[in-house]
Length: 385
Ligand code: SER
Image (tube, rainbow, N blue to C red):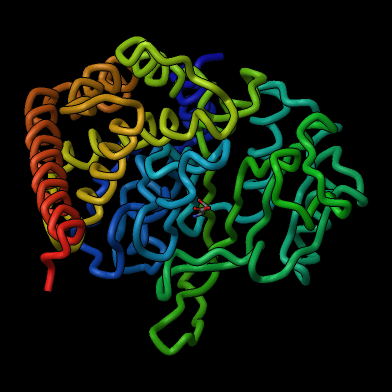
């Protein structure tokens, strides 16, 4: 199943359960000063959870563009080192605004995973917030997960909040055991204790119940609600039986493009690091520019500049001088333009913005090298005061 098919199946499944398919919101959360970029599917519904905004539906489903670079959920420096971190990724989610709660959220998730996309029941685990007996009993009642595969964890793992403030609540995650081949070397590698590729978190079901204010005080939301999130790239990696998100059809084409242009072969070990960084960053830069962010020295523009220049540095590591990332925009568009028409429509503009920034980066780098060269020469001549 391709990534595009998976996205489609997810949205259609929840539509068949009475959810309205709502388009992804912009990566720039214009009305929320607490947030740098949209980092989760629930962001566009924050005020609906808080009871400050009303929608014509009480159930929604989305495939949401997310960027986790800067702010509370920041993955920038991890990207490329692991099989599953990204600055840009897509989060599929279903939402209930005071409609259904834990029971239906668990039922739907189980049905989608085991019946619609056919994941093996015996490999699935559920984690719950340590004192959430209700969720524990529902997993037992509604699914085939036995008691020993329901794991109680603490706040760090099983309490989700959007940021320092805002809607939050205990959560329950569904993990898949990818088997011995994926285990790490840690002697205590076990579910709930180890974060390695064997125990892959697939889906986070958040039981939204509170609003946290600046002082950390939590008040109950007007109505208990549901916010779930499942990374498209991760699930695609399981369905396509590959060990890394970068080997799914959603990202591999970008890596093949880099191979084609540079003539270098991609390796799946740490030598492939620059390929993964460039592929990931090509997506985030394309989408950020499409949503109106421009490279600059502050705020969102600065994060974009950092991402773009990080990619440009790795392009250089691969022995390539000059603009490169801008020419990957059409590849991103080919892969994702149908689901996100804005990148198709703005393709030429995005390409231009990225090209200009890449050129600026190379100029700055050359000037820096020149100055450094002059200083070194002076030092060698003993002429530096
Ligand atoms: N908001 C939760 C998350 O991002 C579930 O969607 O994990």
